[in-house]
Length: 432
Image (cartoon, rainbow, N blue to C red):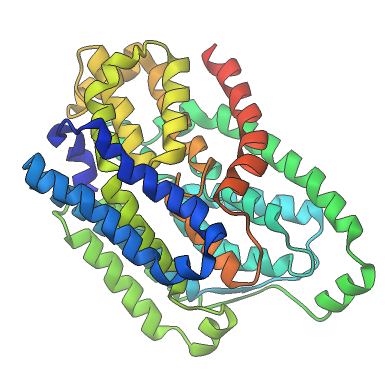
């Protein structure tokens, strides 16, 4: 986290040609599973490392800015410490669910997940709930169950507190008051959440009616709700404490606390709990390797945007909302949030490194910060790489036997037709 906060201050001006490794990384994630899935499964770590090495070498030798790459390495370590720890601890909590999930039960589950995301983060809520979500729909689970879970629990849900999503936490560290988020974003959150759950319920009702009754009864017989591995809630609390300690303790102490909590959780969790969750490290390893390439190759894109954002001519909340949003869908939404927060503050002669200036920005141009916050959080659902938990949910779902859409299928069949009209309505209601 400290590296992420300092990134804009140490940005170099990269050549536009250095955006190509990032484009190649995105295209590889999107295309290679279709072109040659077996080859990709075996060699994607090498691809990620190779593309990342191109960018790292450019910064080290051409720009002579090794400090920037060191910052990115710190950022990556903090990122993986958080989501890896949450992955391990959530894997030690087994929620036995009643399998016949009627549409209204699914809708309620998603709503509860969205609320929970504000207390344990979108990553924590996603890792805790994705397995029971698949199990409770096991006789009729389809791709749209996973997609809407990502939309709601992994992204939109965490829009009410700084704990909910990394961009909002970075804003809190910069000086945005803790309660500012819920005071200013609750209305948009409620509208988007209600619309997404309504669309999901309509689709899910049709799916439920097509499922044979005898299958539903056979699959759900003798099932009850039960929670195993509850001592891991304590380790979950330690991880959340580590998140807040980033503001108080130097790197890497908060991250080491998270990793210690995850290690203790793994070795104290009873084997039957892990077996019931089909727990393996494969999903977190996949995310770890892919994000090595993503974190490294996206640096030129972020630096170029940070240094040349004034050329974009952004001067209205509507423009900040769409620019922050669209780029958050294809870049990690946390640094994108910081980039546009810096642009908004700089346009008013303010600095994001001054908490007093952040409060002044809120007092004089509150809608700019609202637009940036909503754009970063909501549009993180636009692609699998927009927010950390998205790829992990996809990977765990695939491990559990659910067929999930590929990168382009997710984007063009689900995200664009469902999310863009809803996000457009938010723009009209709040920023027109």
